[in-house]
Image (cartoon, rainbow, N blue to C red):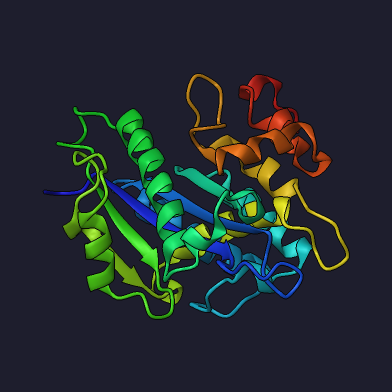
Length: 261
């Protein structure tokens, strides 16, 4: 099968549960989806931003290592590309039984399952049968220490995903430096992480996710539950309790016309 889409997936945060001992409150997984026909043009934005910032050619862009004033033009450039972003935000303290997720990659695979379900819906929504044969996606995962292709295939064999989009043979795991699309996925995941995870001094930064809003996948004008998902479901009550998440209600629960700037 010839894939119609390419999906780049990266993460931000960690999977640990030692809150107060170094573990992050949030774990974020983001996917950047491009049509195969648009893929090269979309990922070339990394070259454009490198040149703009005076970075050496081919040197990977790592969002966490960039200053705020450099992140802004990077995110702005991404928001103008022919691509879609899908993200899963996991608030670990809200998980009912954290012990369930302490095993090897348990939390990662739980988030990946939810992410791929929404990626499938996005690809089906974007698919044009006149332009391509089927909505199949090639999935490019950012390399994470110790994750083997055998473990990935074993996990895929045990979950149910839309077979019209997700095929076990269309997965690869590579280092971000080898794929510019993974650097964009890193920027997306890191942007959402900055919007939910308080800094060392207790502040979050939502400007990046407000800038990304035009390329986040939506359904009938709403991103929440489509291009942006909060796990577990119990964490959704925080939308009414935590003012740091106000950006979700203001910009992701409504259409672009009312999302502000």
